[in-house]
Length: 270
Image (cartoon, rainbow, N blue to C red; front, side, top):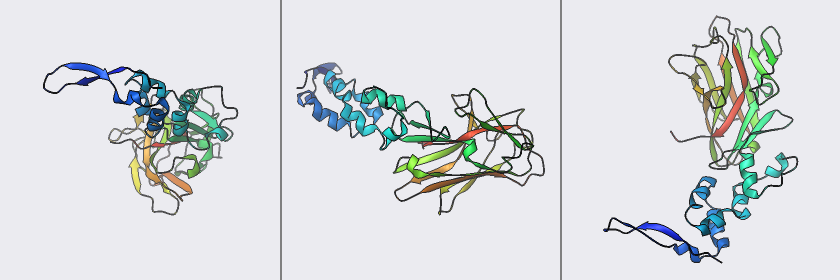
């Protein structure tokens, strides 16, 4: 079953590199595939280069089935004719679900679920008043419509999302994804109070800036900006996440902000 191949190992005290057969090459490929399936997609891609036997084991559907999230098939109208590995990486590219209201994809390295909730799924104060907000289409957005702030004094955005769309046992960070117009007059350098957490629990608050000199938001690869709202741990038994983005203390009118949505993805170590 196993193919013989060589891997490099360093001989202590001689300073040279010698090659020899890998002890794992005597194991059946199915056994190696089973072991790899308990690691992560990133680890699987790394060990594929160890030997031809490992490379063959990593191609197994049984490995990539373990990396796919539960219920993934219900999110895809008609699964494409891919191998399971190809399907996994296809799911790492975002696609729309729930009638185009949310964008879903998998974190490529760990296989965790990621979601962006569109702006029209959020409760935006004065969001339906055309003198305060307008809903526009721009080509660089994932969604059909985004929210553009025209003029408000009371700036308040709230939202909720069911945790079934996220991976259990995972710490997540939430980000507001946006663009500014003319440096966002009246709001750019103001501290905006934000928070995110599980419904029914105390939600910690922090401050963000949309276009400040002290705490600048981060520019994304897709050309949008993002600012972190906070973190939470998605554990068994939790049902909903709630979030808020509020600035109601300043007496100045605010404008020039375009909001695409709120993104939830696994927290990265700092």
